Length: 160
Image (cartoon, rainbow, N blue to C red; front, side, top):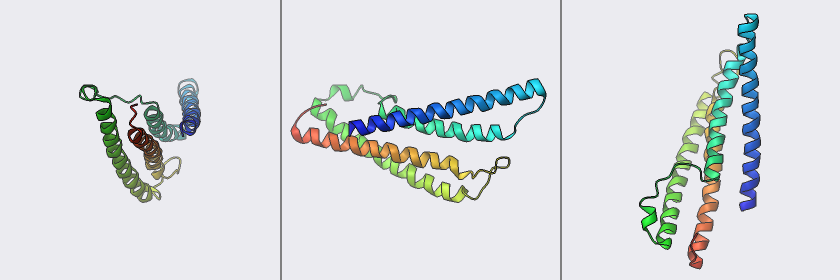
């Protein structure tokens, strides 16, 4: 399971690098055209905005996979190893519920905004909400794997 998470992490890193490269090229090209030739490509602003939303959500999945999000450990460090494992399972379960709320709410917004087209590019505005559906689903899968491994560790009596 860890190898699968690493593979998905590398894939997401590659996608994020590609998104960042495309955004950089589009914005740089637009700046050169504006200041050098007094013209611009108007679609670049909308496409860059869509890509930035996707970059943010996919980056959140990467950070979650690598446990890079901010955490407060003052209370957790005072617990025993078994208590820390139980608390991790409890918080992972609550985060899984939050992922469900994010995915279900974002899916509704995606469907509602799928027919609303952006004024310049004509892209459906629901694409921005699809990013949170994908991110919530991926984080949910990571949480399920984490909960499963945490339950196995607790059942064996080991600590993480």
